[in-house]
Image (tube, rainbow, N blue to C red; front, top):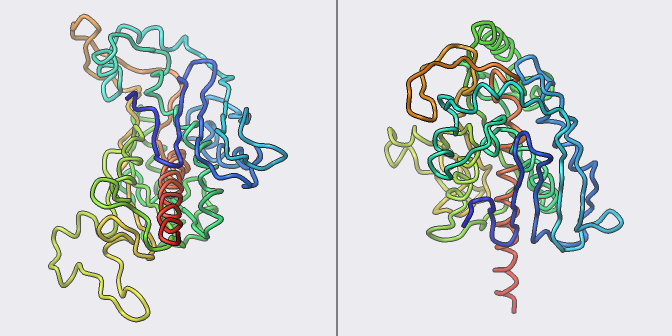
Length: 355
């Protein structure tokens, strides 16, 4: 097992490196007769494209996607869908000084220990650029779940210690940080400016909400849908924590406080975050992910070289100050992929019951 694929019935494999010729994905198990063109995927890729915010990397990638297989006359055929996004604005010169040095907080050290070889150009496959393939595959997953009325919305909950107070989903598209609180977004911008000027980076929290999800998605024990969601989100390089519903706050509650009372009209509260016993209950699914600060910073840091000798490093080149907001479409993509897979698995269960 190489760890480059996920899913059971809706299966996604990604490939490619940050400074390689291209990145891409293969999506297997997508149902036929779904309207799908390159423009559908392009709309999602544009959301995570670099160079669109002053906190983002100035790397100018158009991220143009090409569908190589799996569609005919604008519809999916049920066969594997192959996607490719070519790298256009590659500049590996800034990484030559880093080829013999392990960057703190990055995957340089662990990749070298695992494989005995690593692509030092932009981090290779450990780079955040790998997520472009996830977003492309997630765009297809979104088409699958949208047919069933399921919608995935993510936004900036917190950045650099500044948290959104009032949550207005209508406000998300009105500011570049995709924050549902305009005043909080302005304070976040100030934090980003200070971090950039200081040669540092910032972490944050992304909230993800799933509306219209039917009850019954998820498998018992090991393939619980919350377990699969957590794994999918934790597979994003920047994510260091995932909580669903009340999350860690549940540890400080009593059972009477945490349990969601059931009424003839539905659940009175949603501390469970839309999932009970690993199966969706029909409520809105509520997820929060903690994203660590960008590892590549200008500030001088202590490290070692490939021979174990102590040294210091100040990282130049083109890097984000924060993964937010570019990580938001990636989170939406990973959640959509999991939901598409479990939706198809549940449809197979229902079909079997009817036979």
